[in-house]
Image (cartoon, rainbow, N blue to C red; front, side):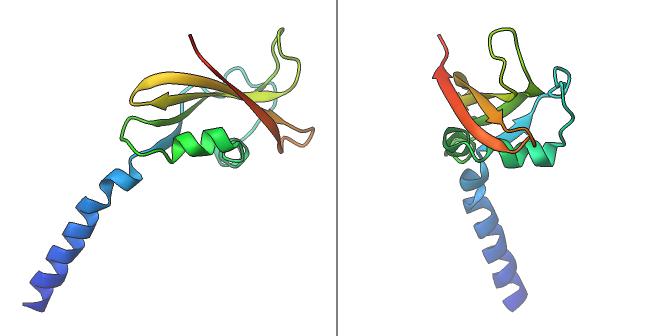
Length: 117
């Protein structure tokens, strides 16, 4: 009887905790393609999660809300500082895009997030 009780309690806790684990931080399959400097997913996660806006979206309630790293450390013609590009989604809608800037050792420097049109 105890086994059945504990098994049912474990299942109840598992199913009731699902919405809390719904938000995400993910990477597109070719996220490192535009990179001008190599970086692992673990290092990229550590860098982008230091941006408060990215962290907030990746922990937001809702199974279709979160953050997606779309480009590894790179520079562009319009932004000469090394950065990672992150898209932020709320209820499956792309709301913001962020540039998460890195220092010379590819550590977190700052971030700038803007709403998309």
